Amino acid sequence: MTLVAPASVAAVQKRTILTLVATQAVGAMGITIGIATASLLARDLSGSESMAGLSQTTQVLGAAVAAYVLGRVMDARGRRFGLVAGYVLGAAGGLLAVLAGVVGSMTLLLVGAELLGATTAANNGARYAATDLAPARSRARALSVVVWATTFGAVIGPNLTGVAEIFSDSVGIPVLTGPFAIGSMGMLAAALVVGVFLRPDPLLVAREGAPPAEKAKGTSWRRAIAVIRERPALAAAVVGQAAAHATMVAVMVMTPLHMEHGGAELDVIGFVISVHVLGMFAFSPLVGIAADKLGRGPVLAAGGVVLLVSLVLAGASPTGSSWQIFGGLFLLGLGWSLATVAASTLITDHAPLAARTDIQGAADMAMGLTAAAASAGAGVVVGNLGYPVLAALAALLATVVLAAGVVGARHAHPA
Image 1 (tube, rainbow, N blue to C red):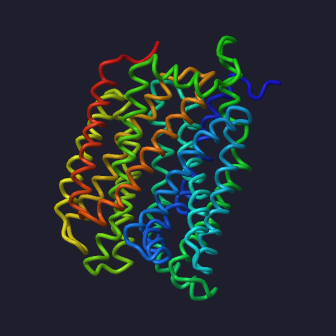
Image 2 (cartoon, rainbow, N blue to C red):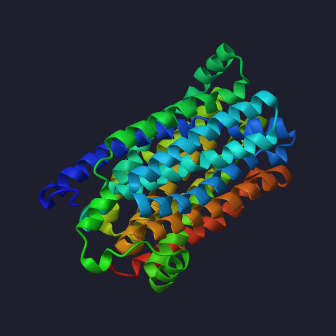
């Protein structure tokens, strides 16, 4: 059955972008509102600062697993079904986090964090959905617009911690669980938007218009890995994306604890996180234009350089609130944006359509697993050696990002 006339593909792409923009704005609010309090809640429930990053680590691990699972779901049912599933699972996780705070269960918090990762995976999958029908010459811009849309919810989210406190008092739940309750509402709203408006499904339309040779069913994990190994630029993109995300997550999740040690108030911590998120998303359209005009590899390498500068500033910051932590966290987000937009576009450029969702899911799974390991290690490093040492170790990952960009730049775009 024909989903859309060829002449209407551009119209479907426009509708897809608008829908994904709305979805990202709402979904990002849902997932980022709890960033400023997640490590604090985990510390209180576990009774140990060395376990403060465990909740965020589990969420990142959940996102890694969900990325591959949702990739398989999208391969079988399309982007819409996979995105809705991710947001609904994430909302359930947020509610479990609230319950964990009420009953004082660290185990329940970790289960909720695992499910919350599905929303992160869905948000990540939405950027790929933007590229399904986009011409190669403007693919990075299409992807970056959806990443940019995250700005609205992601910047607002951490700054709703004050509102969440009021909400928590009004409904009688622990103050640190309020952000998770409000976040669940945002995730359900995102599921509703994408479920109603992402029609026709862009991936299914792209497959309909593909040459017969590219209409084969989705590939296995082994086939996805084989394709990545066969294409140096694709491998570099996967590695660079994973290293950039691990760098960002490791430092970001420990920043609230570093600031609290110096007496910073919760609203100030939330503001620093929002500045960081601003760097992650607000400039992504410019990053997309640069990636289309200058090439994916050079922009990926630039991301590695910016990440290195950010780590110098963050590592030099005193505990509490300082200009170094504001500047460092902003550049940490900007470096992540440069690396992620460029690497994600490289992945789409070099992934054949028949294997695309598998490769994208595998790449995001690698990104999540690397970040989960970095996050877990970050808590141990900060608890025993301090925040500056964490920044120094993260610089090794940023160097990998730079190297991946150099490799990507040496290989031309596929024909």
